[in-house]
Image (cartoon, rainbow, N blue to C red; front, top):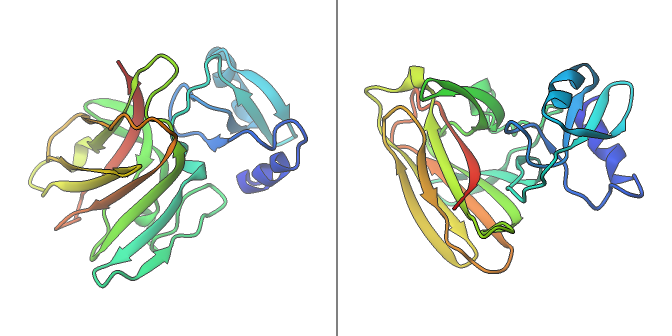
Length: 222
C-alpha cells in the first residue's frame, strides 16, 4: 500500500477523516503522521501513540499537537515569467513533480544544514520559473502565543560561490520578502501575527539556481 492509498483510506475513517494528516517532514513530528509499519521503534521512542494501522502503515499521534503548516496539505505550482501557472502533481511518496529531475521535486527530505542533518521541505529553485507553495488555513500564533517562523537553509555541500535564494511570503493580506544568503546554517524570518487562520504562500526563486540546494521548515518561537 502506498502513502496516498493510506491517505484515501483515512479520509473514509469515521473518526479520523476530519483531522489533517501529513507525511513525515520534521522530527519529532508535530502532527498526525503516517509511517511504514517497519518504522515502529523510532516513533515509540519519540513517545508517539499509534492510532490506526494496516499491514503496511501506521498513523501516529504526537504527545503535543502543533498547528504547523503541513506539506501534505499544500498545493504546489510553477510560475513562468509570462505569468503562466502549472500545477505540480504529487507522486506516491508525496513529492511534487515540478520537473523530470529529482532535484525539481519539492517535498520532505533529510538535508545537512549547519553541520546537522534536519528534516525539512526540499524546494530547489527552478530555472526560468518561480516555485509557488501554498498552505491552507495557517495559524500565525500557537496556543502559547508563539509566532510562526520560517527557517530557510542550504545544504552545507552547496554553500560557497552561489547566488542568494529569494523567498516571497504572503500570509493573509501581508507580504514579506526574505533573501537567503549563501551561508551555512538556518536563517529565520518571523511571520506577521495575523489573527485569523490564513492562507500562506511561499514563492521561491533565484537568478542562478545552479547548486541552490534549498530547503525550509517552520517553527513556533517566543
